[in-house]
Image: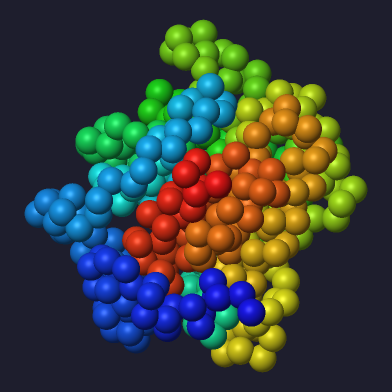
Length: 361
């Protein structure tokens, strides 16, 4: 039986240090709150702990296990996935947890409130979340201001999207506006075309639409390279709910346009593994342990089709070190965490870094 799921969290040996124990003690109180309220309070507490110097004491430095892709040197292969810090308000505190890189956003050109609450639901029995947030964010100008106010000097990815009321025919304008605004501050930029919570967004994964969008983005990237004297790599984040022929078409386009990376995957519309659980029928994207196998299958398929020409970043269902190893074994160069952090806390970061360190091979 696999022990990375919910039952594993009950095993005493998973509590190996004080931060892990503290989070295990706090989790019931957090889980008694609305998911979005708990998210906000947790990040506020993290900021406070960082300001007091407590994170530095509690979170020992992870082992050095550098990875080089996209022309960047990552201190380790474990990153924060987009969505947890949409506005870049908590960069310094999150950067103290041992991640090899952070990805903030999704950000849109204009501020927008997202979908109506409640819009975030926990499924603890499956170690999963369902969200229909809808790119709620304060807009790209606010995100840039937060980055400029931070002291984080690690690798920063910025995830960009379109406003909900921008027609698909004009979606490229929103992506280009965000790319221009964040370019001076990003180490890489992720083009989010796979969230299920903005109506029609996933249609941008279709071959003709994606071809048009990538051509526009790469042309603007070349202009910005000349303007700023540096090349900021582009990554594309895709959905897990793609047929094999769609993955093939996307891989071909990524190669043709020389996109620097692909992130697999976003959340899923499927409900396999959560059938009958409370909240399982809520609209939105499912993340966490039930997504692991499908996300890994997409990573493997992309890696085979891209043949090492374009690196794959694996995300989806990583709840323990073995899950991270699985993504790397499938062909990913880096991994990202989100839902696993909700259930495991910051200790998951160090566990995954250790699992992927050369000495663990």
